[in-house]
Length: 276
Image (cartoon, rainbow, N blue to C red):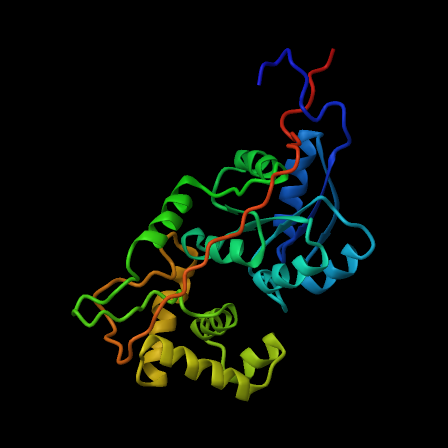
């Protein structure tokens, strides 16, 4: 922007932003970063989805910044439950989890963008501007992968059986359960964290095995640890290599694309206006 020109937000009120993140340091960092712009105002922050719903009923922001990994209800489920109640609320996911694996799921849940926490904070304002303008924000890398996923065959093993091991066919609940399994949680631990019964957890685990074509609980646990453990924080998490774990059953992948709608007038939240 030409420094002699006023900011697009100069004549309006600051954009009202709320933050839902379980880490106090992340909430504080985002708040400080947005305060520097002088064109966005953090109206409240929350550590959990449950707390956020209570605050939303009292004060509704224009943009919600959400982390996927939350205590209690996770960010994906939160966004899904949020959209029917607040369909016009814009949501940006700001997470340390793999963009390659989670970005498409976040869009399907109802978010309008994904910004990885490893990306420079300078990307935050452009992401917010794009979303407030009614557009989807993803990194170039994630956009290319999303396009490829619509045009290429599912990930297959290298032994010619054509079995899908990518995990894309798992539901969001099944994804939660396999990640908790990778972290060492028992059925009881998982049940308590997700507020469901241990029997329901076991049923989900069986469904996951069937979808992946794994013939035992031991192989499911090995799969979970290898592909959803510490590697879930890395760029290629959730996308197993093609030469391991021969499955026993053919599966299919359902492909979804985020819906689009007419974009509202764009609102700028860039640099603060220059002092005269």
